[in-house]
Amino acid sequence: MNQLLQQYQQDLALRGYSYHTQHNYFSKIKYFFDYTNNDPEVSEQNIKSYLYYLINDRKLSNEYLRSSYSALKYFCVQTLDMPWVMDQIPRLKKTKKLPVWLTQKEVFKLIHNAANIKHKALLLIVYSSGLRVSEVSQLKLTDIIRDKMRINVRQGKGAKDRYTILSSICLSCLEYYWKKYRPEFCLFPGKKQNHPISIRACQYAFQLAKSKAGILKKCGIHSLRHSFATHYLESGGGIFQLQQFLGHKRLKTTLVYLHIQEEKIQARSPLDVYGKQEEFIR
Image (cartoon, rainbow, N blue to C red):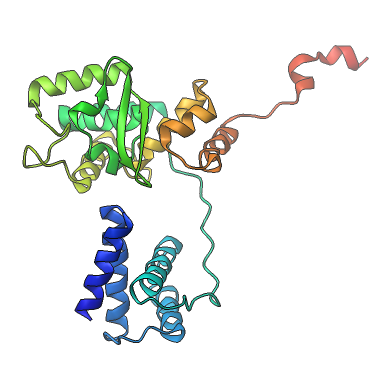
């Protein structure tokens, strides 16, 4: 069993999955074998029983179940070199929820309540550039392109490089932060100078500031990325440019932020906008 798990771990790495995805998939397979008492046989029936257990007994989210499904599929097809036995089992549909975002006042209040200048700079760059937490944690000093006011995001989701926007206010904050902390390689080092800050530490910085700011919305640091996208469109930014800044492969993913705007805008007929009532009611 240990040999199979080691092979799976190797297959995930060779596929080029991110560290987070590797860890996620590997833990799902380990949990599957814990459920089957380390039975090496992987069949349609024991996979069905396992997924039903997750739904009925554990009552886990659709996202967790879809991730388990993907982990099992890759394990069967790649590591075991066997046909995928789950074709007869419908995959759960992805739930469609509008992202949780903060208002401009909430964002500013949260950032002003950061515990220190390092936390403030970190939260500010996440919001002002629309970064994922995994991306901000890996930023290097050389990724800040001052002359073009851009940030070089290396190996973001999907192992893609991209450029996103750099705010002049954020740059000033980063300069002040650098003078105080003097990071040498990583923009936000962890406990060791040459090692990046952990994702957990970034999440802690957000939750600490959120608590001090008295914000009661149920949200995490990713809500700052959603807030960037929403406020960017509100300020007149274009949807195609936003797609590039966020690193979305499909425009459909970016279009969700237009739905958020629709909720905030009171729809008016063009007749009411351009016409006058007395012209027609006589």
